[in-house]
Structures are given as C-alpha cells and as structure tokens.
Length: 480
Ligand code: GLN
Image (cartoon, rainbow, N blue to C red; front, top):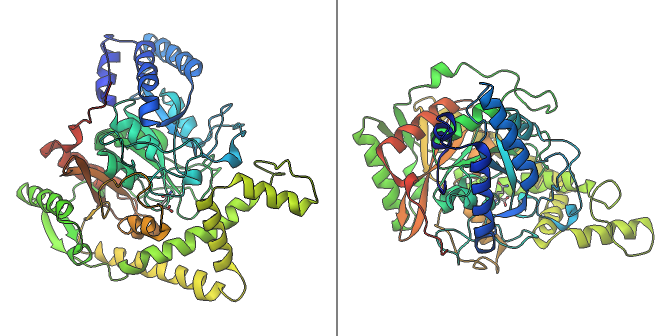
C-alpha cells in the first residue's frame, strides 16, 4: 500500500483506526523519498534511523492513548532549521560541516507534538533566491515539469509536498520563499504574522523579515501545523508575547483587490485569478477595489533592507566563529578573506556586497534609512486598506514556474519574481498562497493576505476556497 499524496488528516484517520502504524507510514515515506530523490532532488538529508525511532515512539504513545493531531505523521524540515545532532547546512558550502547542537523552537514543538521528521529539504543557499538553483546540493526540479524550477528558496519543501512525498514541510519566508514556491508547485504555502513562529534555531538571513511557516497541500493542514508550531518563545526577542483574540477575525466577508497593480499579468495567470475571484463572489464574498500606493517601490526597498541585514548576519561566518575555514595559509585577515570567498556562492556574495554598500558611511541615509521610511509607508498602506476590507487578494507570482537557468543572465530579473510577495513581507502580515488554477500544465497561486495576527481569517478563507474548488487536489505525474 502506498500512502503517497495523503493529507495529515488522512494519515490521522489511518493511524487512529489502526489501519496503519506510524512505522509503516514512515517506511513508506522513506521509500518514496529514495525513489524520487534523483529525479526531483528535494531532500538533502534523510534521517532514516532517527525517523523510525520517532515513529516507534509515536506508535507507543498512540497505544497508551496519548495522541495529538500530528502524532506519528511524517514531515520534513527545510535545511535552514536546526535539528539537534544533524547537519544544518542552509545548502551552503559555508556550513557543510555544521552539526546543530540544539533544535530550533519550531522543530522542537513539532517533535513534541509527535510529528516524525524524515529529513531536511533542499533550498537556495542561505534562503537567497527564487529558483532553488543556488543550493550547494544542486537545483530542485519542479514535479510538474522537471525542466522547470520549483521556485525558492523553500523549493525542496514545496516540491516534496507537491510530489506527495510528505504531507507537510516547514519553510521560511523572508520575501516570498514559502508563497512563491507554493505557487510554482501547486501547493498551499503559509507565512503567519511576523513574531508568531519563533526564529530561534533558524539560520538568519534578514532578521526583521524572516518568517518560519509551512508548505502543505491544504489550508486545514497549515492550520494544524501552525497550532503545533506557534506561540511565545523567550529565546526569540521578537516573538510576540500575546496575540489578539482570533474571534474578531473568524469570518472574512469583504475582500480587497488592488486591480491596478496587476494590469501587466500574463493573461493565463490573470484569467485564473479572475475565475477565482468570481467563484468567491458567487459564494457570497464582496470584492472591493483597493490600492496599495507604495507597492511599486517594495522590491527596491526589500532588497536594500534584506541585503543590509544579511551582510550583518553573515559576518559571523569567518572561518573562526562559524563556517568553512580555508586551507590557505597567511595572516588572519587573509584567512577570513579566503574562507568567505570559498564558502559563499555568487548570489550570497552579491547580497553581502550590496548590504555592506547601503550601510556604509555616506550611503546609509540615501539607501538604508530611506528604505526604512518607505517600509513604514507600505505598512501604513495595508493598515489603511484593512480599515475597509477583511482580507486582500493578490496573485502570488508574476509568472508560472520558469525554466532551469532561464534567469541566469540578470539577477534583477529574478528579483522581480518577488513583486507580489515582498510588500506583504515588509509589513509582517499573514499570507497564504493557495492553488487557483493552471496556465497550461503549470500551477498558478493566489495570495490571501490578512491584517496583523489575522491568521484565523486567512485560514478560514483558504479552507472556504478549497471547499469550493479542487485545484489543491491536483497531482503531478512523475516518471517512475
Ligand atoms: N526571493 C527572495 C530573495 O531572494 C526571497 C527569499 C526568501 O524569502 N527567503 O530574497
């Protein structure tokens, strides 16, 4: 019996009705990963022994009657999260030999909830990218078309869920790294409000923008994962201590759509969005035209702020405190230079250089400070929009999955992939990408954006949309 493409709820039923044990489900999952690993390249480490031991413990817990929603269910973690005693490489040569001494908070919480971690998923190096091509483990292939990228940086997680290998993976989203690959792979990607999921034990890219989240097939699975992962963590100073009551967010009815911003969308994508919006309207939602006036400057703002923070965060990788140490002999400065030159890939170096530049004396005010001011204006745009609407709808990405190596010539072309996701990231708002159709054979995603801590509304609309459409149930056919 193969359990490919089963959801968390379907696994739960199998386990609760004793039709399968967690050990059986986990073995089946490990076998699937082995079968597809060469084809899709979405896993960078498989924790076979550890997973089977966790599955055995889960079976024991279930026999003792102590079962939670995730007990015994196989999941995987993006390689940006620390798993105690296992390599956490961020898919960089810089961290190739780093073994995490502790669990990230979300890893620990999911493990406490009984989830069985089967391994680590591939990603863009240090989570910088939109194609999963900058990974030191090589690119991930999109399960819908193996010549295309899965999106990034959580491309391995999105592809693993799309290929039906595991029902859920963790991911991280700094400027779109959960929502964009979710859209490219036809799965549900959820990034909650900034501060809801702890960043402790997640390798930092841009600390004020880094959001842990999930990739699942459905919004209801995203909800199950969120419940297990979220909550205050004293180890993360930006973790929120308390969240406003979710009751006021339960029932979204009025949805804003800033149509002006999406006038250049390819028709295959806009027709999916139009149909999705009509479907929502027919089921009783009111669609209201809104505007986000500073939307157009969000990409530039994001790249100034995220690169500045990255250049600071990545300064710790010097071959002494952390990371790869060059064999090159010489003085200490030379050793730093060689270690960093050898350890980081091209895109990471580009970000460090950009970030160092915008923070340097003479340019700080013109770039970094200005970007911070614009960030506030964008956040205020959303705040104002949410005075008249419950949620905001948007495409997730300006294109469908593009070809491998297609964006190699001009990095800024890749940066434009983020135009619909980064304004939301800069504002720290909860946002979910749900499958809303196909352009040819390739999935298209729609973003549902909520006000701060309005995760309940976002999840409610995601579930409602998935109860009236079946895009999230479509499966790619992989050559066997
Ligand atoms: N594609 C964006 C970037 O490269 C977003 C990455 C992310 O969200 N981690 O910065």
